[in-house]
Image (cartoon, rainbow, N blue to C red; front, top):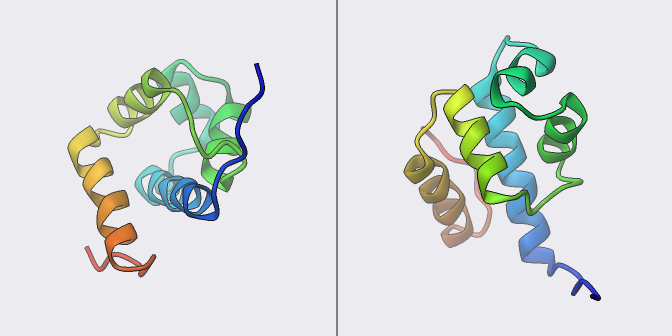
Amino acid sequence: MVRVPLSPQERQRGERFGALLREARGERSMVDVAAAAGVSAETLRKIETGRAPTPAFFTVAALAHALDLSLDVLAAACAEEADHGGEALSA
């Protein structure tokens, strides 16, 4: 199966998503958050840096739970940034 390359917008959305996770992680270590979510620290690192711009749903859900984030809030934040041409959120 050949994977279709991501569009620039999809890559940017992945980078925004990673930035949101980094911000939510705050002072917690990447290893602690990854362990709480049941994913590897390398997986979290790739997501946070945008190198894995389309993580699996259950990975996103586990990270949201570990960071005490609502999936609705994450989705809205990514959609809102896309609607504003990638401008940073002021929340």
